[in-house]
Length: 308
Image 1: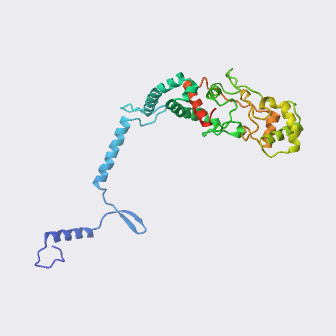
Image 2: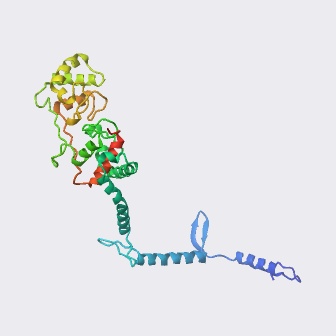
Image 3: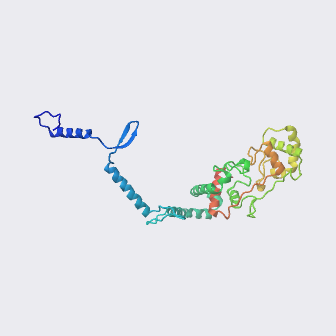
């Protein structure tokens, strides 16, 4: 009995348990010796469930290192007893999808380019496949959204201005063989004279024709300079860019009577174009992509800019 239990009274089992528990709480519990702002840490044992969970995780980790690739070596990691390989799985998935798409690529090869546009199902596949090809091979120059980079002379493919024609056959030809490169005889070729550097026009004449071009495109201009510039334009530029400045796709000569500019339509950019000319180069993809991939990306680009 407890010292507080009156003599002659019998302690009930429930009361006895309470008293024993209270007495145990009075005993000093071992401490770690750590103290933070007067708060001491008791050295209580970890719960058994927590310890067993910890042991299981250790066993699991050891088993994982034995069964799966785990330890990096000089050239590769330990293969593990199961021979599991994420790269092999990815390669298998790629081959599976390529096999599934091969039927569609075969249809692209066998279908006339213009007929692709009349087959809704085949066109959807070509646009999706062409989007992937464009992202991998074309977006570096034309931008992820195909809006181009004016300062560098990379065309915007979202509008309806096509230097070399916007039919799907024209676009296919441009993608396959490129522009002004030395790799293909079928590459698009044109050359604008460097009117200033070659001494064809002097500084005053260059300024005059620049002001006339700005007049044609509806921009602010100096009318006194534009009037004589019209004569220079007719003699030196109209043969390629047309009398009204509408351009000529057969020569890759851009229109000068609209607001679309490959290198910029401000005075300084126009002055540089007339003085030094431009000579943008696009690589051909005839030997880099499969024919079906070229057809796919041609279909994709055609629908971007409202192809002709």
